[in-house]
Image (cartoon, rainbow, N blue to C red; front, side, top):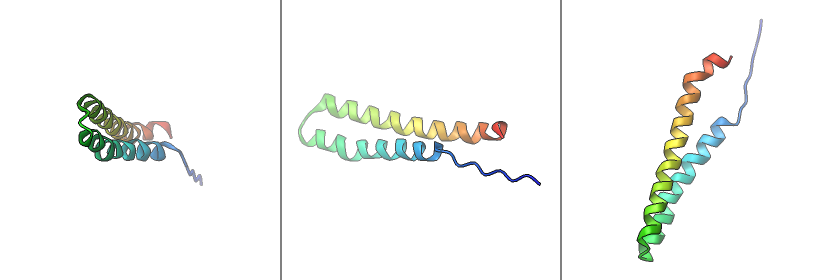
Length: 70
């Protein structure tokens, strides 16, 4: 009988990517809006969405390819 337990860091990386993306969208972009910094706000929003998208993409790819790695 074989028992395999895999503890990886991928879920921590996904959580950090999504959490920091939400943080950038909620905190940083609103700070830039209050300071009337339009280009910085646009860049913060873009980077926040990129961070969230990459986190979701990595989670999806891990879910899709993890059966092949066992």
